[in-house]
Picture 1 (cartoon, rainbow, N blue to C red):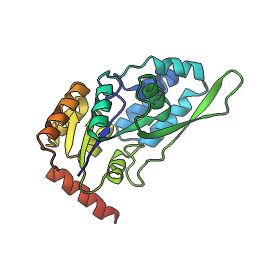
Picture 2 (cartoon, rainbow, N blue to C red; picture 1 turned 120 degrees about the vertical axis):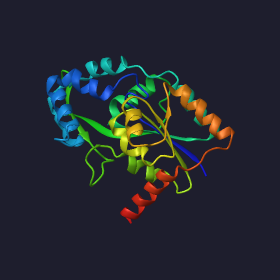
Picture 3 (cartoon, rainbow, N blue to C red; picture 1 turned 180 degrees about the vertical axis):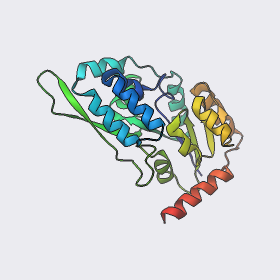
Amino acid sequence: MSLRLFVDFDGTITRGDVGNMFFRAFGGAACDELVRRFRAGEISARACFLGEARAMGRVSSGALEEFVDAQEIDPSFNDLVEFCRERGVELLIVSDGIDYYIRRILGRNGCGEVPFLSNVATFLRPGEDGRAEISVAFPHSDAVCDRCACCKRNIMLTASAEEDIIAYVGEGISDRCPVRYADIVFAKDLLQTYCQNENISYYPYAGFHDVVSRLRDLMDRNRLRPRPRAEAERRAAFRHES
């Protein structure tokens, strides 16, 4: 039995929702309207991303780098990375954001070696002025569900063995689905409210120091256990796919 830890990026590792701010900074009010329509269930997550990328138009690499480099992470995330390394915990970042800013932010904060899966940005037709269009691809989308562009549930189930204990750390809308399949849930903000409403057991956290402290305690006391409801959800998902 192994402990596998999956962690959201925007608003969990970073101080704010970098993805929303990224598109809003360069796409303006059109991106706000697309996000509103997505949250209202009028368009899919993929349609929202594609519309936001179009709204951005041609942007300069320098402006993008300046914006991304101004974003801060929770400094205790590095403590979590070190804890996972010491304890042999498999750590994977799962994000419904964009690889461009995730990779750059992790690298600038000394944790560029931490693996992550997300949506993928490509810069098209760069001009002499250094400006380019952004195209977004979705290598981890689900064939049926379109509420997230990057299906964290599928990633979790594919990356975990049947006997593994799955832990998840998140805070937002795209974290609602995967916590149903996790044995240990760390939640704050919107995700905390969702867990309360759905009667999903969770640990509240303010930063990764709380996550490290709780996981260390559970491991030292040999208290890692599957959550029966999550275990049943995983089995049902595998039966549906087979």
